[in-house]
Length: 274
Image (cartoon, rainbow, N blue to C red; front, side, top):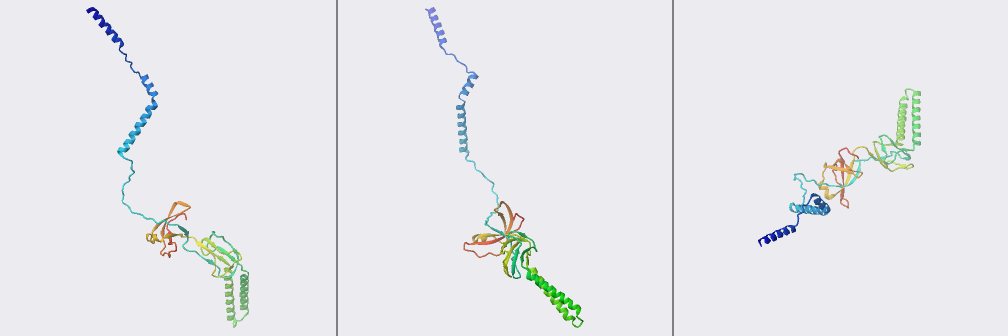
């Protein structure tokens, strides 16, 4: 029995050893093929994990806040108003004699120079008066040559009077051509050919070349914030990106109108585009 028992034990051991499963080792090609097969799942999982980590960091650290350093400075309060550009003064040109306008030699908006003729009046009668005065002077000079020493003083007086009349006639003839007294730009033309010019009646208005000023409509509630000589910056709608220096040049304030807006004159102090 001992011999049989040993044989049975050996058979059992053999059978048991044959039923044990074999261990298969994973190779690198198998691993890479598995990863490639599930690459989209792995990528999505990585994105989810990254987003979760980023949101978690934001919750822990808090939202980003833009900060700036604190500095001491002046509090600036600005008054903004609109207006128009004009010259500090204008020249009103009229006629010194009564006459009919023969021709207007300039147009509105045209630049004019000092002494340039602007209006020509009919001058036939004035020219005839000059010729008559010249004849009177010539006659007086001829009489002086013919008279003796006794009547010479009266002849000299007559000659002086004739020359004075000639000067008057020539001056009136010069009034027939109206000229501009200064360089500038003609901004108003209130006369046409055939108009009767009379003394005291404005015919043309040129704006002299030189300084400019801005007339602004300021709300009366802001008048306490501005003062004479206070610095300002001005711009034009045509050039919104350009600025030029100015200063409050109005020492008087007009009375408030119905809409409680007062005109304030601002003088240009620097070179600019206007």
